Amino acid sequence: MNHATHTEHFANFAEFYPYYLSEHRNLTSRRLHFIGSLGVIGCLAMAIATGVWLWLPAAVVCGYGFAWVGHFAFEKNRPATFRHPIYSLMGDWVMFSDICRGKISL
Image: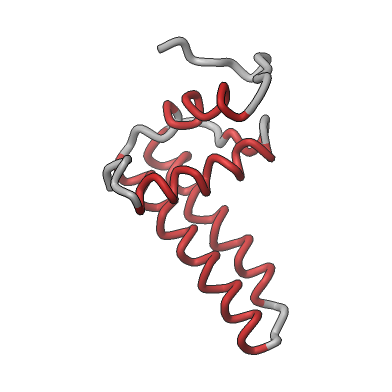
């Protein structure tokens, strides 16, 4: 697979997602991303259920915190969030969905 560099541009998310997956090959990293995404859902649910909106920044810290530990400690790469923030966020949720549906191993 040809890995994109930080100078390459993607015409659309369909072009970006294979690159995104190539940056998430490590099983522990994928697990940390999954846990972070579950944490985001939990924090959002708590914000809605309690009306305590401080759960919203907690959701951001939870989601990115787990993911970035996965990248820096296990993948040994720089998160795509820094170069492609929107596509990266979309990739997080598509990968989460793919894991839930058994398309990607956890």
